[in-house]
Amino acid sequence: MPATSSTTAPTDRYAKSVLAHAHARTLMPGGVSSPVRAFKAVGRTPVTVVSGRGATVTDVDGHDYIDYVGSYGPLILGHAPEAVTVALAKVVGHGTSFGMPTEAENRLAEKVIAAVPGIELVRFVNSGTEAAMSAIRLARAVSGRDKIIKCVGCYHGHTDSLLVAAGSGATTLGVPSSPGVPASVTGNTVLVPYNDAGAVRAAIAAHPGAIAAVAVEPIAGNMGCIPPEPGYLQALRDLCDETGTLLLFDEVMTGFRVGLGGAQGLYGVTPDLTCLGKIVGGGLPCAAYGASEAVMRQVAPDGPVYQAGTLSGNPLAMAAGGTVLDALAADDSAVYKDLEVVSAGLAAGLEAAAKKGGCPVYVTRVGSMLGVFFVDKDGDRVTDYAGATACHTDRYTAFFGAMLDGGVMLAPSAYETWFVSAAHDDEAIRHTLEVAEGAFKVAAGV
Ligand SMILES: *Cc1c(COP(=O)(O)O)cnc(C)c1O
Figure 1: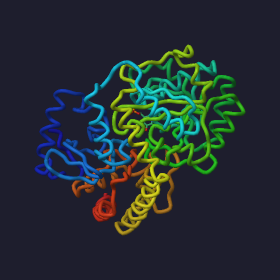
Figure 2: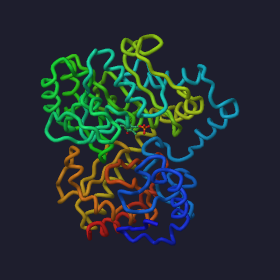
Figure 3: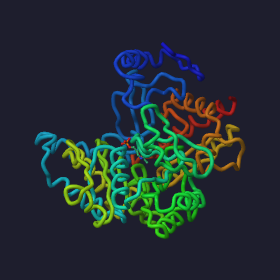
Figure 4: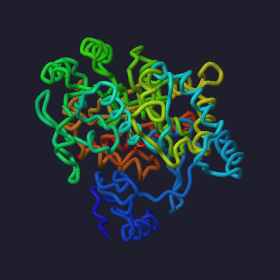
């Protein structure tokens, strides 16, 4: 077993996970269905999970963890919320897929359109990757242009044209970040740093009349959590309007996370195209993209832009998504108000614990999305990918291990967002902060 661990994992404690992972590795690349789950970045053996309930996940060795992964974003109500399990139980006996329209699609579509300012018509797909891929195709079709501007460090799923590594300089032409991605595809992707509207202006000027869309995570959540600087999103809106370029907000993570209207509702900047995922499926595989009616009527069969899916609009996903959106909208969005209070308490507590532990950190937060960056010194800020990757990942590794051993599950990478759910109560936060204080001490010693 590659049980090498920089935080000396008590191996007996994870004996069943170690066995399960060893078996998994004989069956699947890395023993996982998605790479980050292999815990490679933190030098540990992945914990194999058997169940989740509320804010807690339980592993095969019987340990409970306060969970801040939240399936990487979908689980805003926590694990197995009763409303969702009841809704699923109600529909599952009536068939799980038809390849024919259902009224459940109408119901979820109505809720999405009512909530998200930039969406007048919507198309359901199965993953955020698919949503981004389809939205890009649509942007190219309606603009008659091929090139896309993408921010370094923003993740839009693993579709070829958006799977581009960090380049240097403001307008570097993309090079593929994975073998198997043709340079001819990523050659149409122009990279700019996040939070730098001037770089977008320069990139558009460098490719006059050629940029179909500016694609951006309105709150970056895949290089840690990096909020937009004041005015950034509006500046992108203005640049796109001046140049006939479509503005694409990838709200797969932020949609329904930072408010019912997503980041576009929060910041009051409406994009031309919106991608949704994660929460919209209520924990089941589902995503969506949407835009104005004029743009969406270009999608087949109303228009020529082809995009399809055998399991799209799946009735289980529609039921789960609809149930979660109802819960989020209930009582004048009381869930978001509670999330704000609990998340603010967590963020302040983490800052205090880090200070006590002698570990300089920069804590970011928008609603229930949090970032903890292990910066050089107190006062350092992180606003883009260069800043995020300059942080001390070795300290994150130590911190992660100490938190895991203390019963707190963080994402096994320094570049993921923490997600607070409605199930995280004061006791969960108290336990988290107690463990964090020791974990920051361990991290500071690295
Ligand atoms: C998670 C994510 C995706 C990809 O979604 P998948 O369902 O994993 O394909 C795309 N964009 C953003 C912003 C995401 O956070």
